[in-house]
Image (cartoon, rainbow, N blue to C red; front, side, top):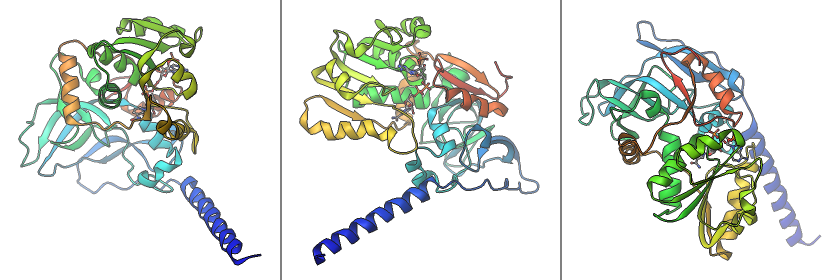
Length: 371
Ligand SMILES: NC(=O)c1ccc[n+]([C@@H]2O[C@H](COP(=O)([O-])OP(=O)(O)OC[C@H]3O[C@@H](n4cnc5c(N)ncnc54)[C@H](OP(=O)(O)O)[C@@H]3O)[C@@H](O)[C@H]2O)c1
């Protein structure tokens, strides 16, 4: 064999072995470690933690040390938290690629939950925006707990007085995702026509209302049992996907926001205007390539078509929370809540969310018994 071919073969073999080693490392799931002890005399709180990857049974409801504020932090007594698909992705460490940041083998941070609403009970020395007693909502790791700590300049905002804690807790990830998909990635303007696939879920129920608030004509897609819910949220037209396929309709959309990823790009492009936009928010589940396949195809297609198709990754900011608080305060945005679970039943809340049948948001309410 020529030296050139020997080098190429060697290179391919090394590449293959590296890929296999990387795949084995990423998919390796370590045993659960015993819970860390609590320092004698320390203040404690109840919290839900995950010290190894797996299904809802890996979640533990424990006494852990209460957080203390740094100079720029506020401590919030959590009244309600909300469950999101992000939480079960962290719980399972899936897709495996996310373990590069979440932790190889086991989670590097055992805290669970992100969305919260509650009351400020302590502030650091430099805090100026919030005071003890303020009602707030926001997004921060460790929200499935009685207390959460967050710097005052991060994803936190004042809760409008006319909005309950459960309704406010439901907002951060889901409503900010809907807002950024429509306004930023989707560049939706008044008078345009938007299709929202997955209109009855956590993100979708906000997307319908925000698209209406932005002045668009809104078409939503959901199953038969949720048609009235989506219509009541303000959709001008609702496709019942059990009986009709929106990609085979005569409509032409300026924007498609897709939370489900159950139709091919070719089918979606058929009902997208020639200069239309499509934002991929969610897609099929899977440990390896399935969740990335749609966005990869969109990336490869992009240079060859006028339509603008791409995935988005939301990032919760204080500014967007304030914008959404404004919509809630004047009644243009409400949270559609499906179920409440007490903190001790967070595993059940995530088990339910993983069925993909939630209608709106699933709430972890601190002082409640299960619905
Ligand atoms: N890119 C980002 O930054 C980002 C941020 C947040 C969420 N996400 C992703 O977005 C997706 C949606 O999140 P979510 O919080 O809305 O989830 P969710 O609340 O679990 O969504 C459940 C909803 O999905 C609907 N659904 C299931 N199959 C459907 C179908 N074939 N057609 C239309 N609707 C269908 C269900 O409606 P029916 O019962 O009526 O079928 C249900 O109401 C998830 O994949 C999540 O990971 C991405």
